[in-house]
Length: 281
Image 1 (cartoon, rainbow, N blue to C red):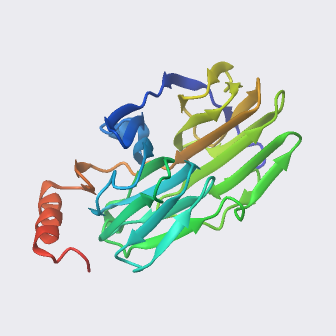
Image 2: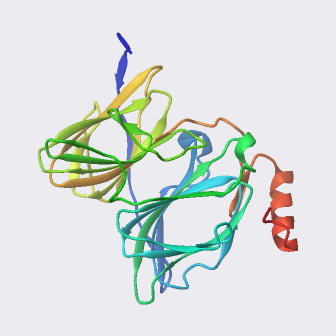
């Protein structure tokens, strides 16, 4: 928009992510810890996992979307909605809308260690019971924004006019950036979006306050103002990161296990239906 004030975002905080062994075949660490509902709204959690076959059992979800990004290895997916499986490889994303309910599992192939990130996005009350939906977003097929020494893969939302075809119930920008040493770029975002960056490789300088961060650190984005905003990044060495940002839902959250609803009664109903076999609509 002409004469629109663009807020240059700062980095509000930086934290190191640590993985802990949960079993001999599963290590995990929270990139975004659950419970900080208002701080990271619309995002509920982001977990980094390294796991092998049989680390997870078949399990349900309701009231959320899950976004799975494969860092290394491969993950085979099965779900009750499509009745089919699928394989995600490095750099691929599956965007699953659980909505009214799905039962699914993600399983590495035999002998494979999968390394992945799974984000949970809250759904607003009017979308909690929406029909389930799956979008497989192959890294080799999503729109790309390319500049000198910079490649941004746009999995959701947009990046400087490059728009993803991904469907959103909640407006979310998800971008994977790969930058050569010394390259610099900015990502534009609505000022109302809350978000964060997770560094997968290398190091760089981020934000208007030039915060230095390295592989394995998560960076919370500062306030974006009332209109448009952007976040500046310069690569100190070859850099790869994911940026997630979204429009806050601003509703009460009641979360128990795999279900995220607005009331205790809705949670009890989800568990009752799952136990009684009436969960899937």
